[in-house]
Image (cartoon, rainbow, N blue to C red):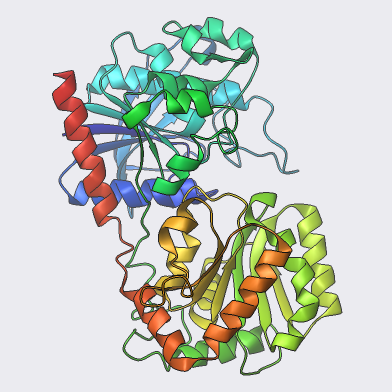
Length: 461
């Protein structure tokens, strides 16, 4: 089975959000399961490859010259980097001031055109596309092979001027939606299979409320819209062997976790106490619900709780977190930015991981937290619904606390419920061990992808 996998992000080469980790994790496991995967990624940074081979690609004049460099990259394996005019930038999507590059549609439509040319060149059995950045590949293939489109976040659709339809030689009408050129809408319509990154998110986006305007065309896919939960790299996220932790530990002996807890509190200058240490490792955007946590900060002392936040993003949220830290220096610690080593220490040292997302297609952080015996407090959305079991609703299977709505009031109630569970050592340990025992690896998600690839190839034949 030969699969051409096109994505705008791939860890560690180009990492912005969860797409990078998801793409790298799935590709790695597919290869381990015997699938021949060729990854196509924009050549943003001129990344050097070993044993490089160069192919010149046939694209429309406004995207020439275009070429593909295929070679080996340590930690990734074989990789194809596609260069078209304008694709190389300091950041895949954003200017230094945080706003989007004004020519993003030109850049990613060109990337898609080049991927289509690569498809014609290598003739894969299946083409696997990801999000709007690759969705217009189908607009450049006269007779495409079986095609899969994965939606990682439905809200990002790449909508732009309808005049772009003139640049699409095949199926241009499929990419028109509500008077605009909508690459994601066209990708959904033209793909043989649409995958979302959790089963509950697949249900949510079929509703008018959760469908970001595309609910009807998603409902039209019928059983060709499926949810397959993402995994995580269980070698990278393993507290038993994680050299970045103050002390390693396993589910049968959680005592060393207390050393990481103490170190984390000292690192952020927070007070010590018997109550839970809360943590957030997150992008600071409205989706993640950081603003819902801020009103709870004045109540942390009363719960004998502390909060550690690691993240970057919206300037207003950064300012609000800094102000909260100034007003409550012994209860809240904040690190502006992203630090991979610090993220590991936070997962290892915190007691409770707070993830009050307004929507969450899958989420990786809650799985990483449970892998480290850190109990999740989450909202009942998307992949959080699929991965966290409320201990009060299901005492024998509970792994955390799930609140029904993304509001500060519901979150405060959830925090009180979590504090009660935390203060019962036997119950707390049982929750931790259930989460740590769960298989969060890519093995099962990749197996389900292979099943679908096989079905599509058989149908196409």
